Length: 72
Image (cartoon, helix red, strand yellow):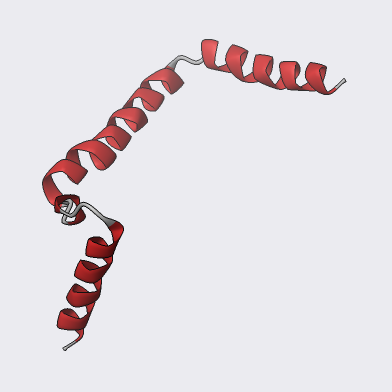
């Protein structure tokens, strides 16, 4: 019974997406915007400061020092 409910739900969404006209274009725009937000902006505006350290102890020490310096 659970499998049939799951199949009906999946079938409902698949058929709904197939019958969309403007919705597909809107979903494409949403996916492009998400790609820009999470991939492109991360590369240019959020550099990895912790990538230069090898171990977790070094990373912890760096974060601790940064927090202390910024709090002063």
